[in-house]
Amino acid sequence: MYNLKKRILVSGGAGFIGSHLCERLLKDGNEVVCMDNFFTGDKSNIVHLLQNPYFELVRHDVTEPFLAEVDEIYNLACPASPVHYQYNPIKTIKTSVMGAINMLGLAKRVNARVLQASTSEVYGDPKVHPQQESYWGNVNPVGIRSCYDEGKRCAETLFMDYHRQHHIAIKIVRIFNTYGPRMHPQDGRVVSNFIMQALQHKDITIYGEGNQTRSFQYVDDLVEGMIRMMATEKSFIGPVNIGNPNEFTILQLAEQVILQTGSKSKIKFLPLPQDDPQQRKPDIELAKKSLDWNPTVQLEEGLSKTIAYFKTCL
Ligand code: NAD
Ligand code: UDP
Image (cartoon, rainbow, N blue to C red):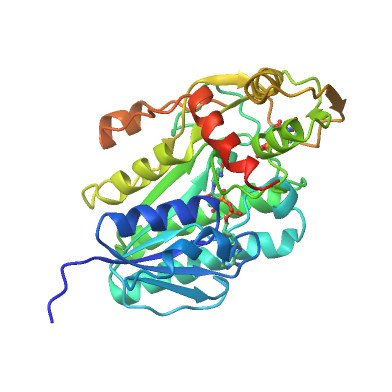
């Protein structure tokens, strides 16, 4: 029977962003195959989708070849928190590089579109501010973040080469720091750490002096941007920055979290990890123009939704 629903594969679909993406794709009337090895993802993130007959969950490692007849692929499989991607750095780079090869190979075989969840980390510790897509970055190839940064850079290269050599329909989005419900409470990233610490009235751990900056994007805005990117005409491949350009110091974030949780936590300063980028803010002109997209959820509103979620994790 002719099926109007699109069949969409989401690798890393049981993770924080992947679970929101699966949910939204189902809501839009698609069939979703969620593939995950549950390294940092969790069944609890997608358990509410398991009753849906158009949702399939497959336990699989993206470093191994995978076959499914799908129309679109979102490649998100990769740990994203520095704590998790540095836990087994060799596996991290294999996941990015072999995962990209396997997802591109699948796209080639079944003639699917494939979108790569790349990252602002491809800009490293940027010397250009804000970061435009045309900036080539300032990445240490031999540091403790390299397994992730260089893995994601190599994945972008593979996407471009499969596009040039085999004419695969690719899309590359560079995601800037994203937060929201279903981040793992012990994820180690700054938003989840600060909220969990504040809710338990523990010390808020600032690495360095807290004057490094990040620009925080709420997950719903990202999902909207990714879906719009996938729907663009074939000739538009990116890379496109997807992020919220409102920039905060880490100290400002800590103060905002304390305020919004009404916490008695005190701030504790700890050493800054090696190669920690000093500033980060996306230039989103390309996304605005090409995707007619703009982030709509600002930090205070996004934090209050995220705080409400983390209260359920205590
Ligand atoms: P996450 O850790 O919650 O999700 C990653 C998912 O991939 C998890 O479900 C994990 O189990 C799965 N995974 C990891 N290795 C795998 C493997 N070998 N095979 C199959 N599945 C595997 O992190 P997230 O924040 O949801 O990130 C999702 C994607 O977005 C990642 O590719 C990440 O690099 C990218 N990204 C995220 C951010 C952010 O701020 N959250 C920023 C830039 C890029
Ligand atoms: N950070 C911090 N305290 C924490 C966790 C992170 O001060 O408990 C800092 C970290 O050093 C970095 C910023 O917050 O400067 C963002 O860190 P995260 O791990 O969330 O993401 P990334 O560095 O990959 O942007």
